[in-house]
Image 1: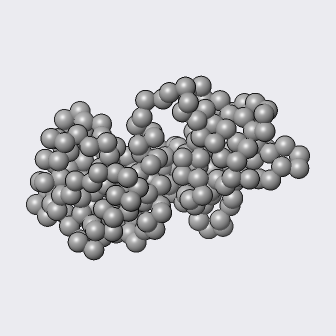
Image 2: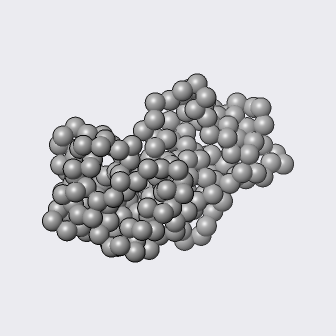
Length: 219
């Protein structure tokens, strides 16, 4: 749901290549109609649209008790803009310009997050196995005990494996708001995870990209 035809066509193309059926809305009114009438599995929507903007559509959808996952696309990169989008009811927020691979990964993560867990609902990254139903983790056959926050952080990294997630993104999705300037919580928990995940001689699956954030890699 995007008014810029170039961006819209690119988004539709990558999602269709991923195997999704993609209804298209060129303005906010049409977007709201599709969400209400077609009950999509997820929504990718620009903030700036004709007639009704994306923030308003989000609020209207949530007022109707509709919990469809919503990913907002926007050129606004300020923290306050991201907070406004999340407060309006969006589940995720991607700033332009964005990499097509990241868009695809974010949509997959939203769909997994919204799915009902099954006994086989596991994330396997190299020797690391994350079972989201039992909230258990193992690596190379050994069980790894994690706290709730450690598990949530690892799960988020695993859902978008290979994608570098920014510090702001991780703070917003794990702690619910941005407090990077006052806190070293993210660095502390990454340290906790590394100590628990890595036995002597094992490669570290968590990659640090200085000044950007972290990613989880198969090792």
